[in-house]
Length: 148
Image (cartoon, rainbow, N blue to C red):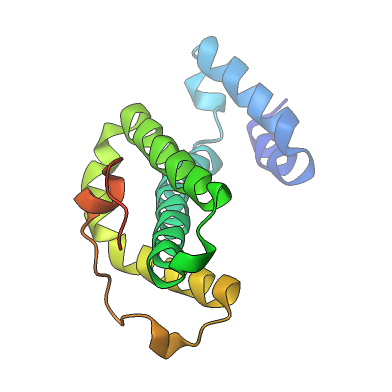
Protein backbone atom coordinates (compact mmCIF):
# COMPACT_ATOMS: atom_id res chain seq x y z
CA UNK A 1 0.00 0.00 0.00
CA UNK A 2 1.40 3.39 -0.93
CA UNK A 3 1.77 6.35 1.40
CA UNK A 4 -1.10 8.29 -0.17
CA UNK A 5 -3.49 5.36 0.27
CA UNK A 6 -2.79 5.00 4.02
CA UNK A 7 -4.70 8.21 4.63
CA UNK A 8 -7.48 6.94 2.36
CA UNK A 9 -7.60 3.71 4.35
CA UNK A 10 -8.01 5.77 7.53
CA UNK A 11 -11.23 7.19 6.07
CA UNK A 12 -12.50 3.92 4.58
CA UNK A 13 -11.68 1.30 7.23
CA UNK A 14 -10.36 2.56 10.56
CA UNK A 15 -9.64 -0.89 12.00
CA UNK A 16 -7.66 -1.95 8.94
CA UNK A 17 -5.77 1.37 9.16
CA UNK A 18 -4.85 0.70 12.81
CA UNK A 19 -3.55 -2.76 11.95
CA UNK A 20 -1.56 -1.36 9.04
CA UNK A 21 -0.03 1.33 11.27
CA UNK A 22 0.92 -1.24 13.92
CA UNK A 23 2.61 -3.36 11.28
CA UNK A 24 4.46 -0.37 9.83
CA UNK A 25 5.65 0.67 13.29
CA UNK A 26 6.71 -2.88 14.22
CA UNK A 27 8.68 -3.22 11.02
CA UNK A 28 10.09 0.30 11.44
CA UNK A 29 8.82 1.51 8.09
CA UNK A 30 8.81 5.08 9.36
CA UNK A 31 8.42 6.70 5.94
CA UNK A 32 5.15 4.83 5.34
CA UNK A 33 3.51 5.62 8.68
CA UNK A 34 0.48 7.91 8.43
CA UNK A 35 1.93 10.34 10.97
CA UNK A 36 -0.75 13.01 10.63
CA UNK A 37 -3.65 10.68 11.50
CA UNK A 38 -1.57 8.70 14.01
CA UNK A 39 -0.76 11.89 15.95
CA UNK A 40 -4.42 12.87 15.86
CA UNK A 41 -5.49 9.47 17.22
CA UNK A 42 -2.92 9.50 20.03
CA UNK A 43 -4.06 12.99 21.07
CA UNK A 44 -7.64 11.76 20.99
CA UNK A 45 -6.77 8.86 23.30
CA UNK A 46 -5.35 11.31 25.84
CA UNK A 47 -8.48 13.44 25.68
CA UNK A 48 -10.64 10.35 26.21
CA UNK A 49 -8.74 9.47 29.39
CA UNK A 50 -9.39 12.99 30.72
CA UNK A 51 -13.05 12.79 29.71
CA UNK A 52 -13.44 9.43 31.44
CA UNK A 53 -11.97 10.86 34.64
CA UNK A 54 -14.26 13.90 34.48
CA UNK A 55 -17.34 11.77 33.72
CA UNK A 56 -16.67 9.25 36.49
CA UNK A 57 -16.03 12.08 38.92
CA UNK A 58 -19.31 13.67 37.80
CA UNK A 59 -21.23 10.46 38.53
CA UNK A 60 -19.52 10.22 41.92
CA UNK A 61 -20.35 13.83 42.82
CA UNK A 62 -23.92 13.41 41.61
CA UNK A 63 -24.43 10.43 43.88
CA UNK A 64 -22.78 12.20 46.82
CA UNK A 65 -25.25 15.05 46.28
CA UNK A 66 -28.15 12.62 46.13
CA UNK A 67 -26.85 10.97 49.32
CA UNK A 68 -26.66 14.31 51.10
CA UNK A 69 -29.84 15.97 49.86
CA UNK A 70 -32.20 12.98 49.81
CA UNK A 71 -31.18 11.03 52.90
CA UNK A 72 -34.59 9.37 53.12
CA UNK A 73 -33.98 7.68 49.75
CA UNK A 74 -30.47 6.36 50.40
CA UNK A 75 -30.05 2.90 48.97
CA UNK A 76 -27.53 0.17 48.46
CA UNK A 77 -27.62 1.09 44.78
CA UNK A 78 -26.39 4.62 45.52
CA UNK A 79 -23.79 3.25 47.90
CA UNK A 80 -22.65 0.78 45.24
CA UNK A 81 -22.36 3.51 42.62
CA UNK A 82 -20.33 5.72 44.96
CA UNK A 83 -17.98 2.86 45.78
CA UNK A 84 -17.65 1.75 42.16
CA UNK A 85 -16.85 5.24 40.89
CA UNK A 86 -14.21 5.72 43.58
CA UNK A 87 -12.60 2.42 42.64
CA UNK A 88 -12.78 3.14 38.90
CA UNK A 89 -11.25 6.61 39.40
CA UNK A 90 -8.52 5.13 41.59
CA UNK A 91 -7.73 2.50 38.94
CA UNK A 92 -7.74 5.10 36.17
CA UNK A 93 -5.27 7.22 38.16
CA UNK A 94 -3.10 4.16 38.82
CA UNK A 95 -3.03 3.34 35.12
CA UNK A 96 -2.31 6.96 34.17
CA UNK A 97 -0.69 8.74 37.13
CA UNK A 98 -0.17 11.88 35.05
CA UNK A 99 -3.95 12.41 35.27
CA UNK A 100 -3.74 13.11 39.03
CA UNK A 101 -3.30 16.90 38.61
CA UNK A 102 -6.23 16.86 36.19
CA UNK A 103 -8.49 15.60 39.01
CA UNK A 104 -8.36 19.01 40.70
CA UNK A 105 -8.54 20.85 37.38
CA UNK A 106 -11.69 19.07 36.22
CA UNK A 107 -13.44 19.11 39.58
CA UNK A 108 -15.57 22.17 38.72
CA UNK A 109 -16.69 20.69 35.41
CA UNK A 110 -17.35 17.37 37.09
CA UNK A 111 -19.46 19.13 39.72
CA UNK A 112 -21.62 20.62 36.96
CA UNK A 113 -22.12 17.11 35.56
CA UNK A 114 -22.87 15.75 39.03
CA UNK A 115 -25.30 18.57 39.74
CA UNK A 116 -27.16 17.89 36.49
CA UNK A 117 -27.36 14.20 37.40
CA UNK A 118 -28.63 14.92 40.92
CA UNK A 119 -31.27 17.36 39.66
CA UNK A 120 -32.48 14.89 37.06
CA UNK A 121 -32.57 11.87 39.37
CA UNK A 122 -33.93 13.49 42.53
CA UNK A 123 -36.56 15.71 40.91
CA UNK A 124 -35.35 18.48 43.26
CA UNK A 125 -34.92 21.92 41.76
CA UNK A 126 -31.53 23.45 41.14
CA UNK A 127 -31.88 25.81 44.10
CA UNK A 128 -31.94 22.78 46.43
CA UNK A 129 -28.25 22.24 45.75
CA UNK A 130 -25.24 24.47 46.39
CA UNK A 131 -23.80 26.42 43.45
CA UNK A 132 -20.30 25.31 44.35
CA UNK A 133 -19.20 21.89 45.42
CA UNK A 134 -19.15 21.38 49.17
CA UNK A 135 -16.63 18.55 48.91
CA UNK A 136 -12.94 18.60 48.13
CA UNK A 137 -11.42 16.14 45.65
CA UNK A 138 -9.80 14.39 48.62
CA UNK A 139 -13.14 14.01 50.40
CA UNK A 140 -14.89 12.78 47.25
CA UNK A 141 -12.25 10.09 46.79
CA UNK A 142 -12.13 9.10 50.47
CA UNK A 143 -13.85 5.72 50.93
CA UNK A 144 -14.95 6.75 54.44
CA UNK A 145 -16.55 10.05 53.37
CA UNK A 146 -20.32 10.24 53.05
CA UNK A 147 -21.88 13.70 53.42
CA UNK A 148 -24.71 14.11 55.89
